[in-house]
Length: 346
Image (cartoon, rainbow, N blue to C red; front, side, top):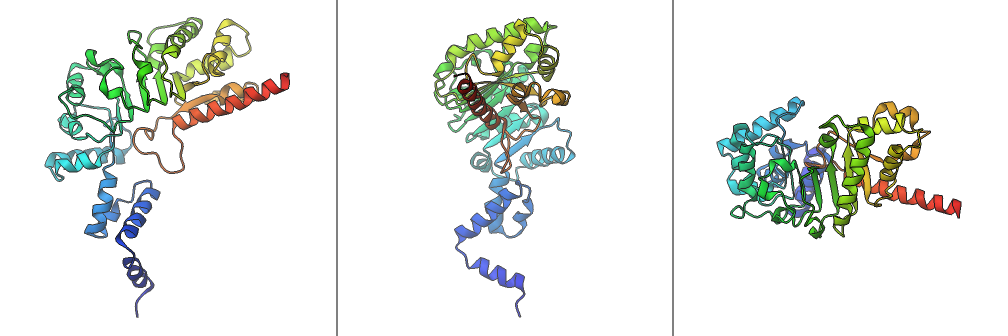
């Protein structure tokens, strides 16, 4: 007499192949892409799931998670041994995070194969060697990246001639995450007609020198005034990322003082320069602000916490919002608050 498991298998096997494949793919996604043991079910199921496993490649050599370090080594070894044909990576890999372009010479051989990328995050440090490696995928002679929609990198890692928004790599982007560089020309930025979300990392600019908090506020305001006229027309949110220590200083130390510094930060927080602007806090919202949430509720709730996780650049588990979504939610919430204030004063 067949067991329940056997009967279930027989029933499942009677489904059309497309339905069977959809069930396995959905189950894999629901597992937050961890159910790699599905590849052991059969050769057919392996052919469905394996491309999904390789969709998101996290080559973070500096991670503190033992499992991720192990995954990095396993992927590097498999790639170097040629277990997969090169066109498999071209077909399958859609998202890459990498923070070391020189480890085992992996990036120089691997990245040029990934011509179907939709997301690339390269957080490697600037160096002549890294510039040369990136040039291998950005140069006119390299394969184009027509599907690339999300890009995150330090501008200084690019060859000097590539630090322009006229470069083809920026053309189709919808999401861009770069660091602020005082020498960067914003000419051509407004021509990025597909760009909807932009994050400008000002952390190193804020910490690079011993800037007084008052001077820093004025400098941030000057940056905004320079960039806002050049924002692309389709842009929905513009995040300015600053250190959590600056947020803490403003909310606690300056919050009760009606000085120019407080006024500038309040203008930025409330989107007065441009309603698309949202301040981001590195490392999340400082816990020390919890006691001030009631007194300065509106300010704290209009700051988007920037997580350390790499979900925005690798894989976002179902049911979770990335920081872009959080920023857009803040913009909507802020609009509702301002409308309610206008109604009360009318």
